[in-house]
Image 1 (cartoon, helix red, strand yellow):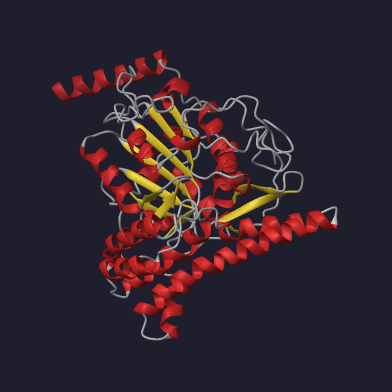
Image 2 (tube, one colour):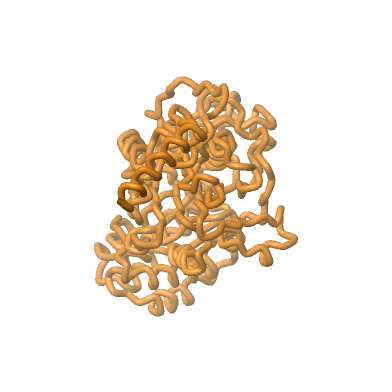
Length: 454
């Protein structure tokens, strides 16, 4: 009798709720994972980071600006979106369209409406971790001072775009190690600073930020542009702007989102689409696979973007490894030169860059020669690409930090970033201790401070 009465009441309540809340409202409630009255609806928080500077790195900031407009257009309140960008490309003297930045060939301006929460020298790894973890006290009087104020029921989306290397990603002034990032995420989990977290990382060797490090049981899901031992790729070279407008992984996930209703596509579906379309590197996934079954709207916002017409599909056949972009752009300037003097100027730039690269490589080779059994072993340590083993991360972290502080700043010398961490990863996995590596560096790194070796 009681069971029959309970079934009757549940049926009636279900009919009433269907009348009171039409399908569109019910759908949005389900999307947000909330109770019917909405009081337990998770807030959506977004942190977007373009970690580079310099006009030749145009694509990183344009990727970040595009991402900002995506989440804003889908209903994430501006008060819950924070963006870190150096802000040096829109009005750069090299930009032929001052104040305008595009992320797609013949695309619309993505710079308009971008806030300046954290720009220039406030774009650092330390600030990033404090913003992500909600440390408002640490961010007081820095930039906008805004932080991610997420709680135990909230969803956090982090989109990072820049250069990377085994065990780290770069910022304009410093680097963020995989271990330091994981410590912050684990601390946030312990303190219940989020309900679910989604991470999209665009960087070379970005898989090394998570492989063997990100647990499957802390409600975090990550996808990366590349695995732990390969480059990510730039694309969409623009003849007018003389730079690359985007990165393959980033434009693939964003253009997919532009063409879909986030309420209809799951994270896993987008991952598979992006993985297939990104044929230049191996897109990876890590962490809690249950989160990948959620809809994009649960992180990007449930609102359908209004009156947006995606630009026509463009070819990415011009894609090149990020580590080759700097010299490639200089070579294109040589080709486009309108006078012998201008051509000679850019050729001199290339020759200087190659000379400085040789100096960096010379130091790395000397370190390798000191620990290697023979020349072949030394070259293998420098050139070999392989995933970082979990037990090598601590050694790699210490070696990277010492080299960046005492030899060449990895953040301010991109060629060093593209070479030294890979060597250290191989050395650490071959059993060379970080103590041994730092002893050698202490003897060899006696040159003056250098920056801009790209």
